[in-house]
Image (cartoon, rainbow over all chains, first blue to last red; front, side, top):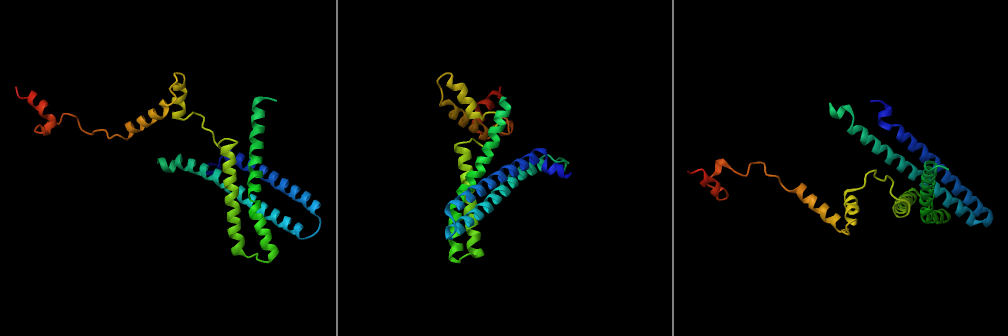
Length: 88
Length: 138
């Protein structure tokens, strides 16, 4: 069994889609945060908004990893079920 | 724009919207994190549970919006059995038949199929086989 048996083209497509949309969402949040920071000006509130943005970006990255793992896990299970090791 | 391209665009927008919803759901935990940082309580044992809470709310919001507003992640190509029965039944005004039919089919599947013939020749003295045994007497 090769690497392609464990991932598959469908999964690669899903990974690309998740990467694109997660990046788009991250950029959107960064843009909104930048706009709010411009409106707020200097001060403690600006630092708080930066920290909220940082936290949200980390959570989005974790959600991205979760979704990738979810899709990969399903594909791996499907391939293991149909693999020659099981049927031999 | 063709139908296929339109549906593809809708799928792409859907995934982007789900990511935005997940990020927005993590904002309350992010505010708590910002307060912790501002008060100097930023430690790993405060940040890691907050991250877990943020991830949990983000995934919950993802699932909620997906099911409530955007439909399921993988729609089945073939309708489920109850749906199929209801579609047939609704033509005759029998919408409630689907559930009953499915329940009955489960009962049939779960019922124990006897592994021996009804006529037990080796046990002719049993009450259940008395009539059959008497046929062999003549």
